[in-house]
Image 1 (cartoon, one colour):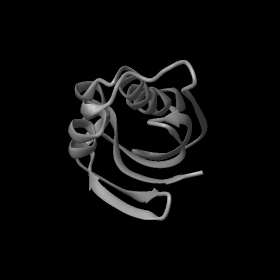
Image 2 (image 1 turned 90 degrees about the vertical axis):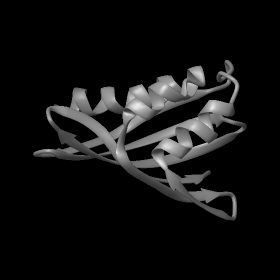
Image 3 (image 1 turned 60 degrees about the horizontal axis):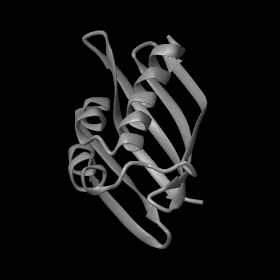
Length: 116
């Protein structure tokens, strides 16, 4: 079970690394929303908008990028995961994901993030 949740978050990571908006979009539920802080600036958008407008306009991540999924908790068909990213688009992030398993597939439904 934890492995399936990690795989869903890893799909997000792989899409970000490759600057592949389609892969990132697949990681998110179609109703996913994200909120957080880029420095002092509050940002919110849908998962689809993040895939298209952030990942879709980015260059593939360089050698300095690193990702660590260091916390996964599963209760039935809901889960949380924490992902630390180093040097994604020039910044370091801590991401808190909420995930739902629907029709047997885990997808990200929410992302709360901050630069660190």
